[in-house]
Amino acid sequence: MNSPGQTITAYLVDVDTGERMEFQYNPNEITDEKSTAYAAIKVPGMSHPRYQFVAGEARKISFKVEFFKGPVKEKVRWLQSLQYPEHDGTMLKNAPHRVLFIFGDLFPGVVCIVPNVKARFFHLFDQSTLAPQRAEVDITLEEYVEQSKGPSEARA
Image (cartoon, rainbow, N blue to C red):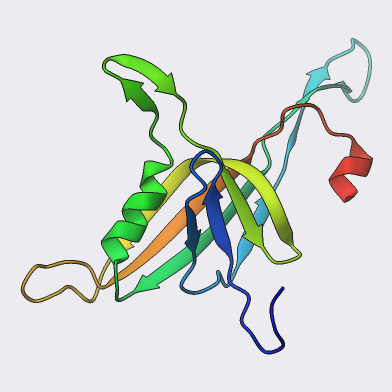
């Protein structure tokens, strides 16, 4: 539990390893997107098509995080590593790890996969090593759901 006045920091947890990355700065904006697919059935003589539910699309949660000073490259690489599978020699061992996204009461623990990480390094680079000192990273998460959800679960 956080003490009064303490800043609550958003973070990701690797579900398989338990590794946790707190964001240096909380995202200023988060997009939470969900769509549903319907088949349009054209009936001769009807003014409009009839619609048949096909399936829900993935719920996508997108945001930007910023890193300034410190291990900027390592933090970006950790995020990117969540997109890579594990191999045993030439054989696939495990799919890319899932993550738990925690952002206070808004996202108290959503299990996701990480299909997209886009990093931009800019403005500040170490003069002797050219290591990045600033990065902005656009992250897209897709909710990982084991079984179908209904309206009551979506509202919870």
